[in-house]
Image (cartoon, helix red, strand yellow):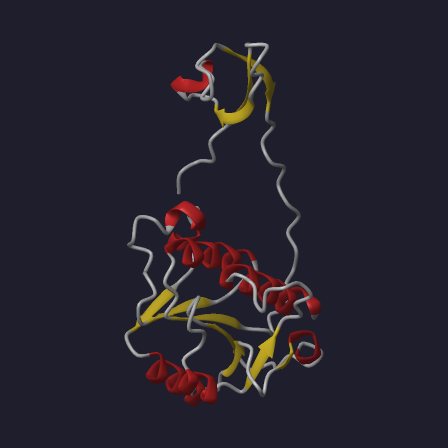
Length: 214
């Protein structure tokens, strides 16, 4: 896995511009303002991120992600990064969902796609039936007539392997797959939109599931 690049903050020396921006320390374009082309000066070095404390997670809660026909490589990459951070066991990629061999996934996964195990399934229904037969519980993030509040559901998280299902950005979760899920859950929305971006919704749910229960 490649090392994390070092960054600096540069600032344009032109009085009418003074554009301030981060850039990799060894980038040859650092000395020229990307807005006006004037020379820049070093404003500050960005210190490396400190090592995070090693937080113990409950081994009783086994989490898998299930991506049903997610279209965007950037959403898939973001979900990989979140799933790695929240200690997921693996990711199931179904239908049109791109796999980590797609070059754009790494732009948001940032290496998590090389660490977290994943499995590709052409047919999400067949994959879901197999998981249920193996004893997994499937929870879908989906607004439906039978959905319950996510925060109501996580009061009682099952100790069986829990599979968090998210669906296509426009079409949602396949209705037949949704019927196989043990619960459909919605996240509260107080604005004009009815749902969040799929990667954002997954992130909220993933961290809530992992760290709500010790």
